[in-house]
Image (tube, rainbow, N blue to C red):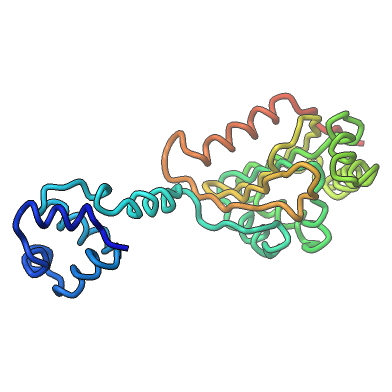
Length: 247
């Protein structure tokens, strides 16, 4: 398909393909392909051509506008996983092991962590002993939101029993200096696993178990970004969660 806008721009200046090629530093055959085949050059080359012709780059090559939108990804995004099952459990362990100041966990149950990494409690104790603040918020098995999640995921009472199991897993940490455990009954929009400036966010999809929902790995690089939004949401839940008592 011909690029009629580019053809008209050349005609208005009385330029040949060779003239535009010289202005942009490319082979005349490349310009011929832009004009006669509708090919799109690289952004830097397209900008040179547009400036030489006195035209708008996106008007000459609309595809460049679309490509720019497609690449508009936050610099805080390290990786995106199609589902939680694709994330190695070792990644969670490594995330916590690298923490120097803070570890935050917001889930309903996430018993897969203890099942796949039995040393999790030991790791959390070690980090706390090194001065790391550890906050763990798990679902209140008796809350209406937990029960509703079970119905939506067709999991029945399974989610409630897993919340109780998660509590059993974490109970040995009660009384450990630097570690605090709470239960919450909020609607869980995302499960969060954070160290100082990195976070794994397990998004939740209606009717889909958490292991089948996507996970994005974030790294904080500025104030008020995506990372901070999730960190603030954790704090909001934490403030209304109930501390688990010893005994």
